[in-house]
Length: 146
Image (cartoon, rainbow, N blue to C red; front, side, top):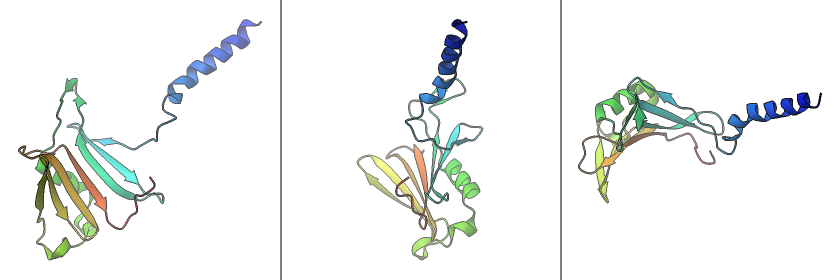
């Protein structure tokens, strides 16, 4: 009879162990396209999307890439899907639709596409046509504290 309670305790410990290993970390939402591009939204304290990062997985379909990149066309296509033009608002600073500017600092290239309500910034290496990550930020949604 003493084996049954001991076995039940051991079973309870074993069943709870997998979730315990992640308890110290904040959970996040992640979505993935068929081509291994991850879409990672960040939510404000009120539950609104305040930021989205877009990046290619380093490990996908049994392949490892030490420098996963995304083309500008892939980023802009996802931007169109995730933030429709009406949600973006007009281009910032009275720029033409789709206008962008690029700055380079320390070998990192940042290409900005600015709108009234959101901004899109694509980051990559200075001499590479592709990008490592793209960040969409909502200007009127507070991401502080999350």
